[in-house]
Image (cartoon, rainbow, N blue to C red; front, side):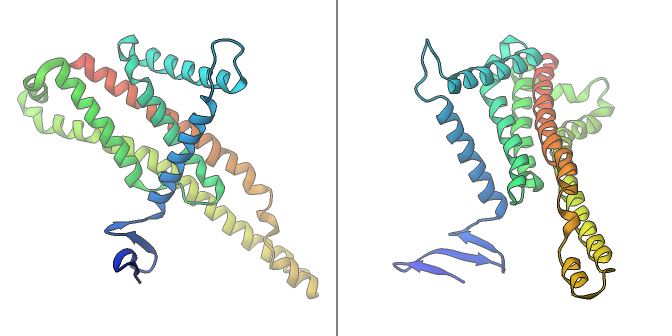
Length: 253
């Protein structure tokens, strides 16, 4: 299906479910990712609006506290010479955290798509490589693959390439597993509810068995772990690995 405005094709479909804008497929991951980024931008604008030196508002106090936490995290893990990395790490953490938690609103989390984490990991890998080249030069970076002996060069190359892969797959696997487990729990409880209340004879039993009563309350307890705790922890771990890899790359160079 295609929709045209003044003869120009602006909207269509690739397959039955994936809309496209021009030549760009508009997947749910892409749309939700942009919504998350807009939400983060709006949040930052709100808490930093009308900042003052004296008699600061609660919004400004929150903004200053967040900046202080980000500074302590980056400087504590990387050293003061990497203080310029604070905006990047803070943005990465915010994007990961909001992307993980947006699933609570009933949409598919962007981090349940490996492409999301792969993009982040590639950016981090480029920054790691840049730090190694900056510290030891391009020649030193290449020579590093031959240490401690040239025979290990292929393994060193594989080890280098495994860094972004492991970062992406770790984050993706934990988020996706939580979504799958939650889905299985909801399905199992709905089936148990139907079987349990189906034992009641008559119209009352038929009515109650059609309502997934057991889905109310019980999954919320597990959601606290799979959605809230795991979402926050995965964002923290991803940023922790980012700071450690970049700092170590500067030292190795």
